[in-house]
Image (cartoon, rainbow, N blue to C red; front, side, top):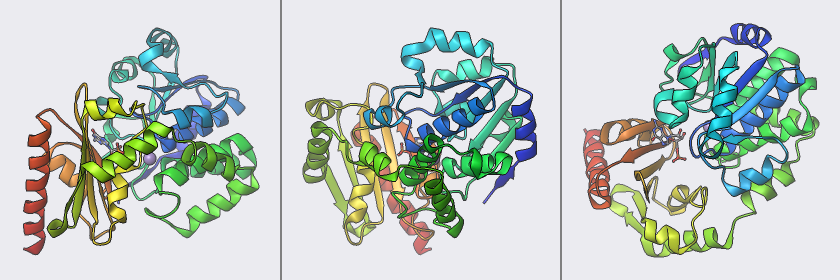
Length: 342
Ligand code: 5GP
Ligand code: MN
């Protein structure tokens, strides 16, 4: 596991700056949004001016959880973001490893900023040469956990406000499947205890994120599991495909398929899962596996598609047909199975 803890340099860069742009990844999730909220509030409390930006639309549950905190969606606020980015003297990229592939058209804006850049992230293969300093630890269960380490290291737990505590908890909870997988270290649970002391409202986060689904999402999940899931018992794998037509039938909104890819792994004997979503720009692939012995889906995504992520959770894009994409996946599973059997 690679670790880069340039914390002193990060503190110095923050101290020397006044206008900071915080950038999250495409299809922002709880960890991305939680890190933007918490880090932004911390910087604002230090007297900095902060602009939080994500490339595309926030899913509905995350919109509600962020409350009054402003997070600009580049797709709908491009002119404003471009204008303010010109005045930034520091950019902090959070919860993604690569500017060129993980933030869409926002990469051009980030590339255009001539100020220093910091990376705070836990994904494999970070493109470190693009950054002046990094807090990058691929063994961390969430970026929010790294934000917690950074903030407490720089200013102590006392600097964590209830809003920051809830936001950090949000990322920790979503990226670990509510503390059920990932790097569940004793220190993670100690951090959660401190967050509760600092006013994290766990029930409110849970309600907003996990119990505020739309009826359409619920029915889409039911349809996907009942009608579209294919179980490959011989490979201990399952996959789901969803076309644009099917997504539209259920009034699909950004974030509605969040977590769907994990569900087939609840079947006994299934430890690899894939979700293939048709979009206007090719097929979005999500891959999941279980544990250190499970399929390395980061490598799988890189080998058979264009993508990456973590060992047990990765994603990719495919620009061939759905049938061809699924065939490539099944063939990949066969090849990897043979390799593992030796
Ligand atoms: P998800 O399946 O939830 O979209 O993504 C799972 C993980 O894979 C995330 O950590 C995400 O950063 C990574 N990931 C998703 N899509 C891509 C992609 O197209 N390229 C790369 N490099 N990583 C991705
Ligand atoms: Mn994350």
